[in-house]
Amino acid sequence: MTMKREAKGKRPSFYEDQALDQMMSMIMVLAGEVSVLADELDSTHRVMKAHGIDIASEIAELEFDDEALEMREARRQQMLDRLFYLMRKEAAEAAASETRDNYLSTIDSIAEG
Image (cartoon, rainbow, N blue to C red; front, top):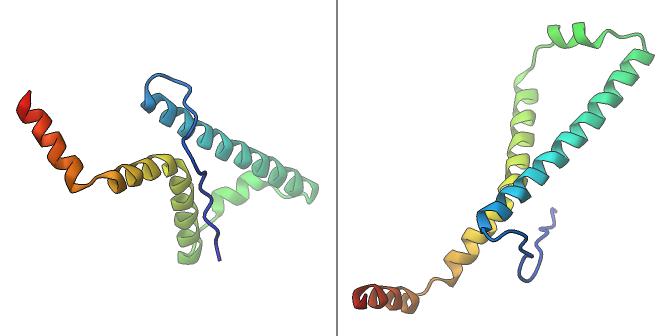
């Protein structure tokens, strides 16, 4: 069972434009992903070198089966879910706060000028 991690309350804001906060959040998620990948790649190269394996040649000859391709796609989707988490959360919050009364009030405000 996967637990959902969602912060309660209002998010802190660092920039005047909310879009900048969202972009910075996405950049930080990507930076974290790249950092983890760099560490894993470094570890892989060190282990292979210790075992006398020429990893560059091995990678060049590697062929993927359907299971491996599906696993890669699932991993990619999980990363995109983390990347766009904040935008989806804010869109859901905005949609949840919309009511018929709010809609009619907005229409009345526009009509009044």
